Length: 513
Image (cartoon, rainbow, N blue to C red; front, side, top):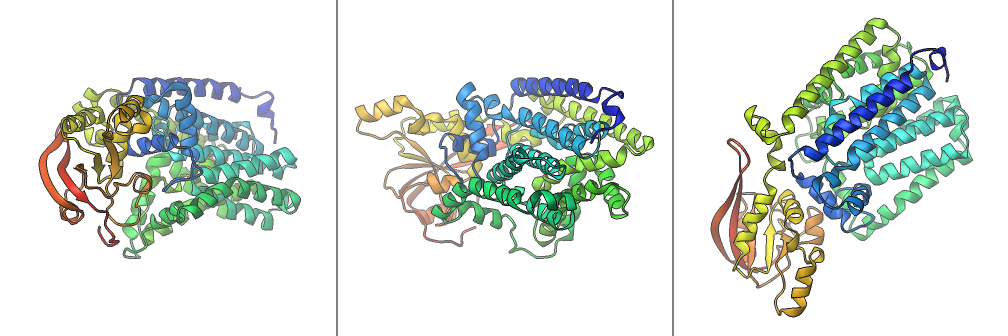
């Protein structure tokens, strides 16, 4: 769709290009200078990238493939692990601009792109490596592909939509939230019905299914680990009425999307219900509302993390922009809301750029999981000296993966010196493993790197201080050693209990918690 602003109005595209170049430069600068180590989740994804597969215990494989691409080129530094994040979000912003311009006009597209790229969640996600960054790009590409097909797009757009859906599902199963809305458009939206009811629709579905098939095959070969884990995240064994979780979840959305933009999104929903916005708006509202209300139901029945409905925030910026540009007063509110949240995000980023400022303002609790992992690795290495341990075992997934990243010589696959020593010496190098709480794997580490039954000495590192009774069930002998305590800033300590165990036999129980 084209309006006069595309021809004679403000140069929205040029303005957006300058803003995005500036944001990318700023976010890359922070990525290179920030002192923070990898979070355990990031270290886990990096470990997966070293072992390419079509699936992993808790996530589909796309996150590992992306990290594998950047680290193959730039090495394994923390910034290289995270490097794709800011580029992915800039690409998503561009796709939102293109989709919004397809649905409405350039002014709406400009503000939709700004709303997205200045989201508090996008600021944060540009500095960490998460599955959401890849997922959101796939969602935006799929949304643009659907919009083009509505306008009579050809087979190239069919391939775009099918590939985006399939690759999105390989990024995170939350991509599936788009499918029921697309089905509804086929039933009730004449342009979508014309575009997708027939050969093109079958090709879209077939292409998405073909891309997902290898991951489903991996799951079938591994007792449907990822699918089961995703279902277990719902945690429906709890009390099935938790209104406080719903309130918490909706309160968190103001922090995810921005206070003013989220308030405007709610008002835009009302405008759609009253029929005050053009036809595409109701489908954008459905694409936004479905994840929000589905996760709200999950919160009511169990719990929900703030980012579980993040797929709502691809269509939402377009919907908010469409509603906002209808009124100069609304646009003024939006501008000031974006300015305020950008100033806040820049202020937080400035504080987070140095450890001293984080400690000075007393927010070190927020970054404690990113600190002092090299120091922790050195402390573990000191404990191994002269101990002739065959294994190091961790009882916590995040501890395991951070040590796996910062102690590479505990994984002989990554250490050529150890491989040569293995040939020359009769003893095996010490290996990092995961102690198993129950017989069934609880994470990818216990699926692939579980501590095996052994009579050899094990250095056991315990993050969970209430597991000692379980350790004594599993080991014939267990001797407590002095703990490893690492300073994480004022008032914060990483406190790992340490044991020397022999005669380990993996439990057959399934009821330990």
